[in-house]
Amino acid sequence: YPLGPEGVRTYMMTVNAHFLAELLPGCPVIHPLQDPVPRVAVVDACRFCAGDESAADRLPHTWQVTSDSIALRIAKVWRASRLILLKSCEKSPNSNWCDSAKEELVDAMFPVLAEKFAGSIEWVNFRRLS
Image (cartoon, helix red, strand yellow):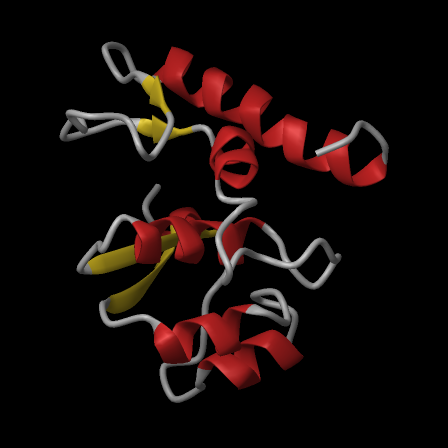
């Protein structure tokens, strides 16, 4: 990713990953293709995106892709059985991912990727956990 608005946005994911890892003692920041994968880790999304550039189904470089779709792409590449979205709001229990995208709770690309994801997707509102 070149530095510019998109590069800065993606690079900030690396900064946030390291910040989160500092808050979670013993939790490393990893690249998703690292082997062996620790049980608990923070993924460096910027490095993942850079390493995923050669994939035919890589994410497009648009503002319709945010950290939600990047997390789903990582889960797909990693063949995860479950993705947990950590959000700061509620999702209507009866809404689908297209509804959530229209309400701007997830990005516009997320419903497209969610259709192709073999695992389950869960929504956790962090504000309710306190």
